[in-house]
Image (cartoon, rainbow over all chains, first blue to last red; front, side, top):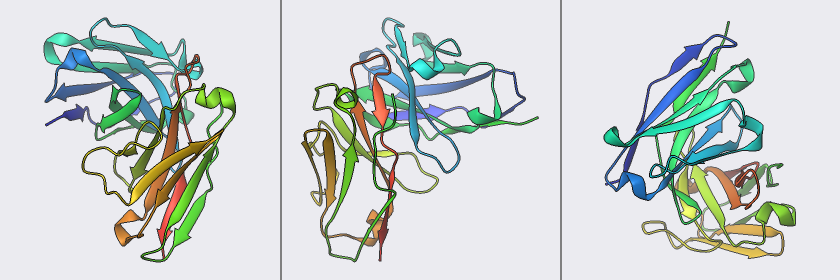
Length: 117
Length: 111
């Protein structure tokens, strides 16, 4: 069965960077894009970008361009999302999700990133 | 790209039908019919309920249905059940720089 397992919660100081991982299993890793979506406390969902695990090509939301980097390691079926220059506004749960025909059909469990001095 | 607009809350009694709207500019939908709906219970990851405006993934109850007219998409839940109480988010592929946009979210309450 398809599973996306994310890394654990992080606490970071303002100005730091965070790198969240998402390990895929149960399907052909290189066959589907992986997306990152975040949700600030009590707020809605926000699309951040996606990576093609086969080619490594990325598309980022305009809001995060220059601050987000998505990468992959095909040898361990894992994608990474790194967000730099963190502020308190980046405190959120970060989800990875598999993209299939313009829908996000499987989601990871989420990773809470807390930015606090 | 601003979020798609949804009502903050919708409520209904068990057995009733409710409809959640999702409105945006034509650029938000990009001329495509790639609107999805996600259900999210508190503290849980979102779950895909509807894709491509009206397609229901395997395992999703047929009480959930979707439609779209112009720049407004809708999710209808018929035969409302207690387990349907959750937040619902629409999403659309835009085809522009920010490829996907989500709605503001709707809290569904079963009275």
